[in-house]
Structures are given as structure tokens and as C-alpha cells.
Amino acid sequence: MRMAAGDIIRESLLVVEQVLVKLNEDIERGEVIYNDGAGFLAAPAGIADAKLYVARDVHDYSEETTHTIGAALLGCIEVQKKTGTAIKEGQLVMVSSDAGEVTLFVKGDAPAGGASTYYTSTIESGVQTALDTNLGILGTCSADAASGDTTANVWVGVR
Image (cartoon, rainbow, N blue to C red; front, top):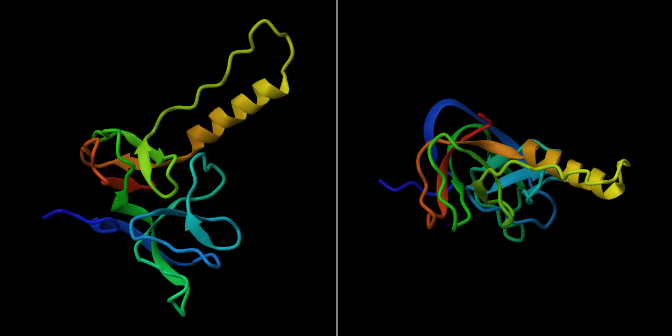
């Protein structure tokens, strides 16, 4: 049986919470979401300063009267995946350039200082970007996902 985005793969260690959707935001089932301080919405690439969740419910803000949804904080969940990159079981995943979708984790690389003996703002910015990338891991892929797949089995919250 083929799984769909947002499906629970294993019930053991599953933690699901009710979260408040941000004003005028729509949420897709299986989308990676986070709280920006005003509510939950699709997580952007490079997110490093918030806990990541996976939406268990679809939420169309204009059609709903209650703006809470179930979101998995921990567990093995079918998550939306950006196509174009294969992910093997055991590899880490992060939010892709498409908000709310995962891709293979690529470690951030701090820039070299070059000939300068000074720590420039450009170097500082590059180092911060690399650190943020390394913090933005959603979890570990629990089964191989092919390049063309639109979802991946992910142990959310597990490195």
C-alpha cells in the first residue's frame, strides 16, 4: 500500500500536538511547518530558530472556522519531498528551497578567511549561514526515496 503525505508510518514514539495556524495561512497534509511567533505555517529553507513539525491535517484558512491542526513533533511520518534528489535510508533531511518540503541534508560550509587577517562581515555572514544550515535538520529518512518521489518516510525529530 502506497503511503500519502502526512500518514503515520509507525505509531511507536509518536508525539502529535494541536497547533494554531497563522492568520490567512493554508497548510497541506505532510507539510513541514513551524511557529513564526504568530502561528504555524510552511517552514522555509534555512530555518534554524524554530522546532519543526509535520502537519497531520489539511487546513484551508478561508474555509475553516477552527484554526488548529494536528502536527507531529516526533515520529515516523510520510513527509512532502522536493523532487530531483534521491534520499537513502539513514540519511538526514532538511527543508528544501520549496517551503514545507524536505530534501537531502547538505552540511553547511563556512567560508575560508582568505588572505585577510580580519573577520569581515562577509565571512561572518557566511559562517552564520553555515551554522543555520547545520541546525535545520528535520530528521532521518527511514526508507529510500527516489529522485522523482514527492514524499519520503522520515523519523521526525530523530538524528
